[in-house]
Length: 222
View (cartoon, rainbow, N blue to C red):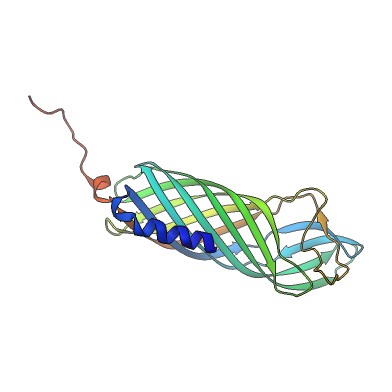
C-alpha cells in the first residue's frame, strides 16, 4: 500500500506532461470466498464473510483504447472455520485482505460511455487481527470489467464487476502460527475466488482534451 501511494504522488506530480492519467476511487461489496483446509487435525473450510470493500486505481493511458493500471483492492472482513465432520463453526476473527495488482486495460469510448476490461496480476496479503495468526501473502490474479460514464472531460462515474483469485500452492501454510506457536496447521491446494461489484468516481489528469476532439469526416481539400 505504501509503494502504491508513492506511485500515486509521482504520477500526480507529472500529470501535466502525461498523455492521460485516470485516478479512480471505488466502493462496493465483495463476496467472501472459501478454501479447503486441514485445521487442528480436522478437515473443513475457511470462509471469508461477504462485506463492503473498496479499491484505488491509477491508470496510465498509452493510447485512446489501451492503458496500464495499478490497483489496490481492500476488504476488512471476518473469517470462520466450518468442519466437514460436523456443523461446527469456529470464528477466527477479523482479517484485512489486500490485493495489489498491475495489468493492461482495454477500453472503447462510445460517445459518453466507455466499456472496458482489465486483467491484473500481483499479490494478495491476508492480515488476520488475532495475535496467534501471522500475515500471509500469495500470488493473485484479478479479472474485471464494466463501464465508465462521462460527467465532463475531467470526471466520470465507473461501474465495475470483477473476480479476484489468490493462488494457493499445494502444501503451503495459510495463517501459520506465530513465533510463540499456537498449534494451528493449515494446508491447502485450492484457489480462493472472490466476486466484487463496485461504483466509483474517476478523475482524469493530463492531456484529456485530445481524446474528445472530433474525428475528421472527410479528406482535406487541396
